[in-house]
Image (cartoon, rainbow over all chains, first blue to last red; front, side):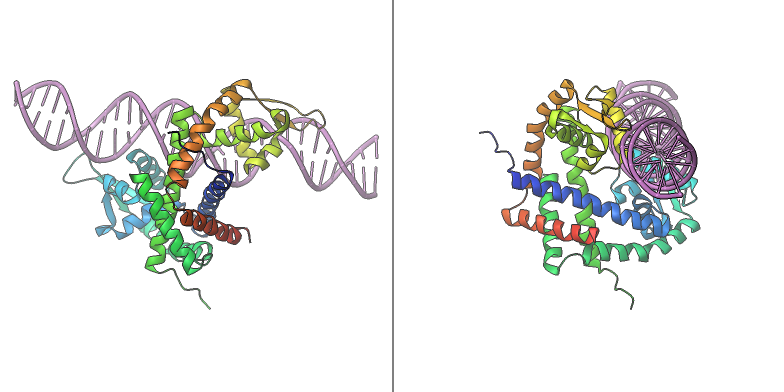
Length: 150
Length: 150
DNA sequence: TCGTACAAGTTGACATGTCAATCACGTGGA
DNA sequence: TCCACGTGATTGACATGTCAACTTGTACGA
């Protein structure tokens, strides 16, 4: 039996939903960039390193933490290394491994970015929704996630 | 008075929400790409041109229709022109203007992409949600949109 | 008519992402 | 031992996005 196609209303909700979430991501990213000079990707990497013991991680563990493919991470680390936010070294136990270390400059950039970033998330996301809407957003995300990972 | 920062729970919802919507966009885009060889951007441009009278639009009207900056559109049109999906000409009334026209190949690619794309939207979005969740998604998107545009 | 300001598009430089190829190292069996 | 294979990571080629500079054409007041 052929599946029914989405109705006009369903398509309209799809477009509004996907475009709004994209605009939200862009808006939070733009605030982060102008407040701190960091991109959302930079922030995620710095956050993962900040929480790691000794503020250092194997490259593949870092990829796991931020949910990126290794190739993407490698390119991004190259850019962050050029800007002095992280440094790369060799793993002691496995010579293939790259140990990524948070530099003092990277730690400082992360420290200064955090509060404004959390404020932006509150203003543009949390405060934009009622408690019921926030719970609904979590519920919707959970349902979508389950379909995506099944 | 300083604003309160998001709670741990609120931050968790933020991450889950923003990452899931990103994964959803990526999944629908990947299906479109493998089904038809078109990117989401290509599809949006072809859709707007398909609905235009004579299947042609001024570049700035097209930018309005897809919601892109002119620069982004210009780069994208260059790639689509190389692939034969659209062609560029001069506007008759305003020599500054570029008239973007859907080629037969572009129209055919769009025609063949549509049904599988709508099916993907139904499977990964509409069918992933209960009717109540779908309504809640629209409600949440509306609330976020109002904050973003205010 | 001139000249200035504005509008439409394009372009170049660069950041970000994906995919496939490649390189370096570790492991396990012949 | 040694070599074929798997894993960790990097690289190159290219698609996609943003920003600022530039080109060309239009409009409008002095």
